[in-house]
Image (cartoon, rainbow, N blue to C red; front, side, top):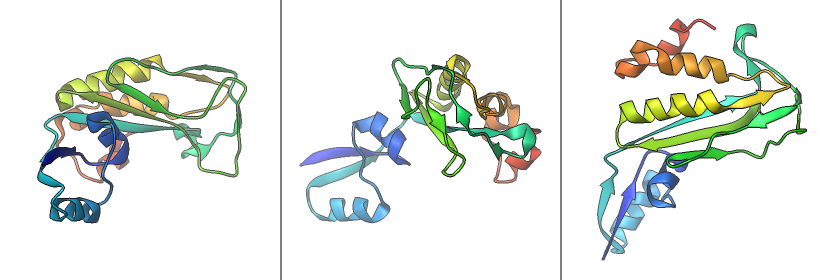
Length: 158
């Protein structure tokens, strides 16, 4: 018998075990199949944010254009899912997500700190993005406390 560690969503699951068993239904099927005698949840924390070609100060209006300069973070516990590059054209006709930034750390506080550091390294010139907005969100004491609900976003000034 083997053990598998499961986490909340696909990108953070990849950081924990290198692959992910998707839906709850798949998890139950795996456990019932007899292939795994125990299912564990990771005692750690991961944060995932999407960098969108949007301008928060203009109601999150899409910001198509050409990326003129680009630097994305990297390192231990940091992952970026993206296909953008310097010179890349961002179309107004598709989803505005240009990158997904995922970090992993021992606990929530460390994951937030690592995400703040990683966001501080992001450079995407030529289009508007929500990077500064995400950085402000991570620095918000309410977010850092973990004591918030779905209405929290409405309280953040853009």
